[in-house]
Amino acid sequence: MNRKIGLNKVLHNFSSDTSRLVFTWTIPHCDRDGRVHGDPSRLEKIIFPRRDDITTKQMEQFIIEWAKAKLMYWYEYNFS
Image (cartoon, rainbow, N blue to C red; front, side):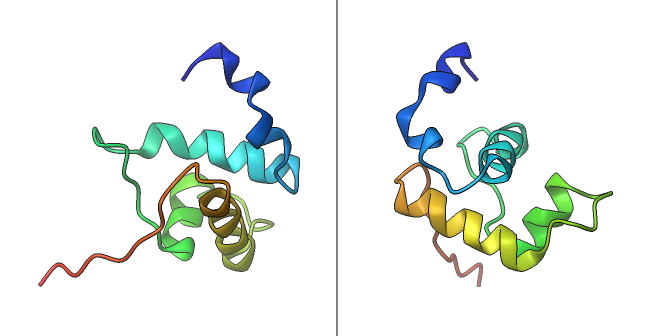
């Protein structure tokens, strides 16, 4: 993470401060290749294990917003 993240124009265009917060709080949970679980329910439980006010639907909307901003790729992987 870099201090310049606050200057990022794309982040300032997110729909809410919550979306910005969740995006930045997701970063430490990424693996060494920058990947994190994309299942909204699972990600919500990883990022906010003790909060009830962040819903799976909200998390899904945040992920969609980040993907549309091209700050992440949301894809499915078949492990079999």
